[in-house]
Length: 204
Ligand SMILES: *[C@@H]1O[C@H](CO)[C@@H](O)[C@H](O)[C@H]1NC(C)=O
Ligand SMILES: *[C@@H]1O[C@H](CO)[C@@H](O)[C@H](O)[C@H]1NC(C)=O
Ligand SMILES: *[C@@H]1O[C@H](CO)[C@@H](O)[C@H](O)[C@H]1NC(C)=O
Ligand SMILES: *[C@@H]1O[C@H](CO)[C@@H](O)[C@H](O)[C@H]1NC(C)=O
Image (cartoon, rainbow, N blue to C red; front, side):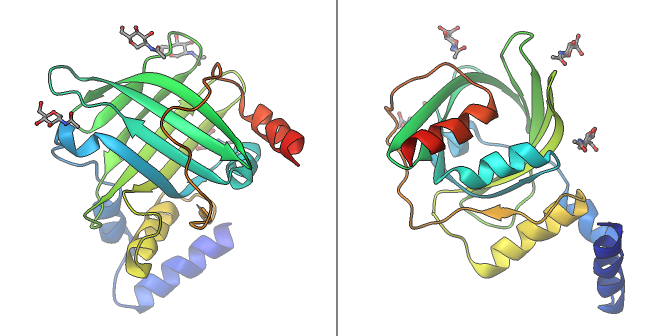
């Protein structure tokens, strides 16, 4: 990992850029986030996190859709994440508080999940940085969401550079040919990541 990081660093230096200024821009939270910009359906395009079993669970999902409710009056949004495993759609509803460009999942003391919306040059994308602290998992996550299923190569490169700035493993890129789940899927209680693999096994 350190070796790869060093190579990337040397590469950037040899290109006439130094890594820190590039990262400074790439890890910057958005200054302003229009609540309406969040509203609606987003597809997960790619993601990376430094917790290996959760990263494996991410790779097992055929598609992930995120829905944000319209919230003009309050800073509380409903956030529903729908994971597809084969024919199964698993719906995970949450409320999140958004303040400026930072957010907190409101899940009582089940776990702590906070983060921010980061800079992106992609006009119909969101880059979410998550900090997860639970009994089973302490991780740093980065997710690229878009209104599209696939982004342009240079947009993906920018996300990969963001992932490198956080020193995270190479991003898992979702298969854009797999269908997204509809917003109204069978609702299941929020369950551990491990169950994702079990659902996948049942589906096979
Ligand atoms: C979301 O809220 C804004 C302002 O309240 C409104 O203009 C817009 O039509 C709403 N969108 C939907 C899909 O309800
Ligand atoms: C979200 O907040 C609403 C209003 O307080 C509440 O009725 C609902 O149960 C909450 N949903 C979740 C998943 O916590
Ligand atoms: C979440 O954060 C609060 C306050 O920082 C702390 O008291 C609590 O133990 C944390 N919960 C978990 C599951 O880490
Ligand atoms: C992931 O990174 C965060 C922040 O650097 C760190 O607190 C956490 O312990 C790391 N988790 C693992 C599993 O390495």
